[in-house]
Amino acid sequence: MALMNKEQIKEILPHRDPFLLVDEVVELVVKEKCVGIKYVNIDEYYFKGHFPNYPVMPGVLILETMAQVGAIALLSIPEFKGKIGFFTGANNVKWRKQVLPGDTLKVETVLTKIRGSFGFGSAKAWVNDELACEADISFAIG
Image 1: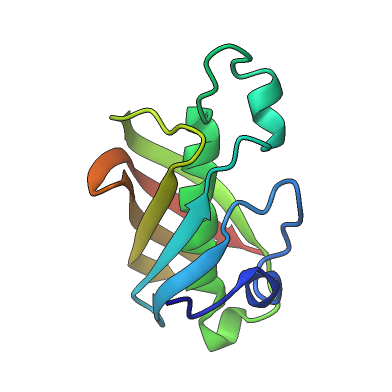
Image 2: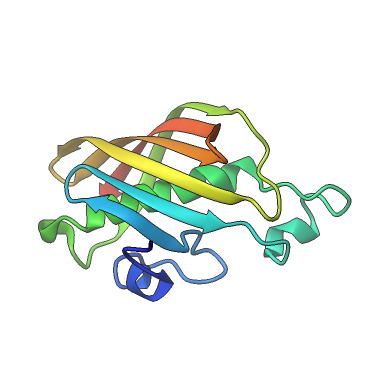
């Protein structure tokens, strides 16, 4: 069951279509973590070129989805409300499974540290309980 739909997510994130990559938030613990869902549809703009005969979600967009879920967690903190979270880094990124049209990508980003206007997190993305991607990510609040 969705805690937030796309319209409610737009109240937190500045991203808009076609670059808003989170369709729902299913869990949010302020200052701790956010769990979001991306429904991967064959009509996504990137499948026209990645790849026409074998559509697969680009790894960088999986990583961006993880960062957007982290930004929701960070920007839900009262002192950051109305700000923009800028993705500043990704370390230890590992792509483990292809994400294909029709898949539901479940992303969890756990905030591991907040220092001033910087946030750090650990993110994981799954398809059908199989780990698709993991990374340590960081943000600057602007």
